[in-house]
Image (cartoon, rainbow, N blue to C red; front, side, top):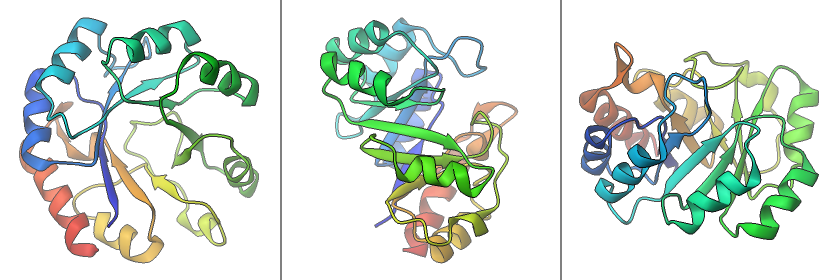
Length: 201
């Protein structure tokens, strides 16, 4: 079954919406300057409300390792997603202080970007366009021959998710803006997205 990750939860209400949908993963953004960035206090409330069976993924952009490890130690996050220029040395340092699984996001513009993703030391990779959370996709034709499991992100919606799953068979799909209305999570769109992906399987 294709894993479903709903990213960019910003409130307790969003967590309640996620509980109704039961995605495999949910995400919160800790990157300063991003529209969906939440405080530690908000993230703690989201984690408390979110079904215990749904891991909460912390999304970071070039964050201090100690920031990530602190959130992990407090039990606020159960997985880490790196969405910046974090390299192999960064990942090595992170793993010295944090044992959580790591997702590394890659912006896909060329075959070279895919090669970098294929060589990644992360537990799993996420293939996106641009900085993420923009609702824009990338050329899926580039994925031909890509050999490792991946989360597909970028421009996914309830309307196009089934086609992407059927055609590409990703390990998982990641959605954020595609299940929002006026910049806020939309319960009906979240439900429709999950149903579409599950039917496509």
